[in-house]
Image (cartoon, rainbow, N blue to C red; front, side):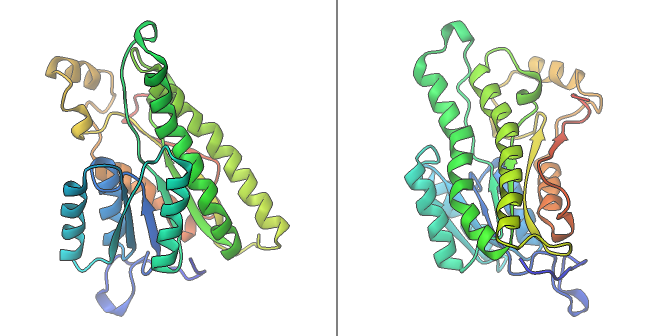
Length: 275
């Protein structure tokens, strides 16, 4: 990131888009909310590095879509629960693109069972992907961002981390854990910038924030019966599910250079379900 500011999102009038040339790494970035986030940044001129785990066919299709729009993009396969894979993919992105401006820790899984039926592996797998993965990725990206004096880390949590949910103790714990991780990373990033003499009044800085969506209309909800979805909508003041692009909009806002005074914050996108 530089200290330039850009107010447009297209090349009209000869002006560059807001994220022109910025490199954005989105984990779980080829489907659902992650794909919407990737597309949002691409529309604003960013270079997209999309992480994925197993579905190579879906990942290649996603890459073709971006390349068809003349978007510079790369794919990075790995197991988000593996610290080694996280460090490798961060290194890949920096080596291939020369920089990393924004890291979006979006990858996540669910294994839903009540506490009394949940076994050790059910608990560990969700914690390892949803929480430990965000830690490993952030730990690998921070030195590069601190050295450059600029960067954004945005964690994707969930309303379930705030209010809990029957059958999702592992998921709720992992998403709630992101709140504490975000605040600690935000403090440590500011501390390290100060220590390096790179925290200035007008710099872009390194910020860490969390977006906590409510129920979003993605494939993760396709298995939920209509009656259950109707009940969920009935508990949301705005009476509907979120669209993935509505979550992406908040992520994009937090990544902007002009958002340099926002750090350690949790942004709810839940239609008023938790307020």
